[in-house]
Image 1 (tube, rainbow, N blue to C red):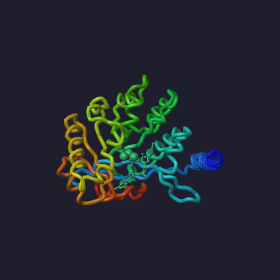
Image 2 (cartoon, rainbow, N blue to C red; image 1 turned 90 degrees about the vertical axis):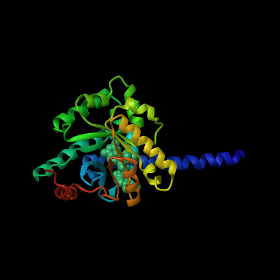
Image 3 (spheres, protein in one colour; image 1 turned 60 degrees about the horizontal axis):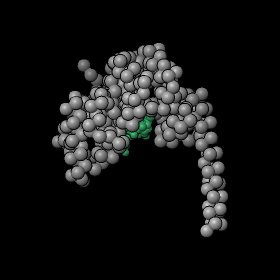
Image 4 (cartoon, helix red, strand yellow; image 1 turned 30 degrees about the vertical axis):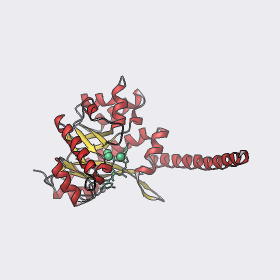
Length: 278
Ligand code: C2E
Ligand code: CA
Ligand code: CA
Ligand code: CA
């Protein structure tokens, strides 16, 4: 047993060594990507129950010189643990400002763009200040952008003496709770979160047609949210049956592959053209 343990340890440390090298290489790659402006945003529209365009979410992509379009799951977690998320967050602001400019220059009137925030972007007072200053400098006013944070991030922020959410709220930005239902949330906490919008995680949406319990849970979330004057967005709507179910449950807004996939700025321009608002 002793030997096994030793070998086990040797195996483990070899694996660990490889993992550490892989992470270090990826970190260097993300840094180079920031330098080379390889990060961009795709946009996924959000629709109301009548099929009108009601918003859009900005989702980061990495246009990697060798690997092609890299999804966020492959670099956001690492960026969060290394602090590079701070720079990525600022890069997202610059990117959204350029894309808004392009749409506005084409005579389009985009709805507000929702940006995802990680609590790890705001660990230091200087980081919060830089972010708020960037919003001002780039002209990203509350009529142009809004923000999404997970429940966990909102909770961490609520307790902090210089809360970034309070600062954003004070400036008039709309806020949404992301991935609702995946954290340790309790419906009774919703009141304290004071956000205008709640996004039900796609893991719930997936089950509403099969499971009566899941449907009941989603209905309860929607009812409580409505009582608190929040609008409810269902994420990850992939099937017509899910859309119909969500309609009967009283959901306000839909987002998912059934309606539209995330798309680059130019494709979003075409969609904005089709959904021209008067
Ligand atoms: P999220 O904020 O929950 O974003 C929704 C994710 O669901 C996106 O994945 C989107 O492409 C995907 N999605 C949309 N509709 C459907 C559907 O019908 N079915 C399925 N299966 N998936 C759908 P994506 O773009 O890969 O982003 C993953 C996560 O990465 C995001 O989850 C968010 O947490 C994070 N992320 C993306 N962009 C940023 C960013 O700029 N900053 C930060 N901090 N995080 C970001
Ligand atoms: Ca989101
Ligand atoms: Ca989400
Ligand atoms: Ca998520």
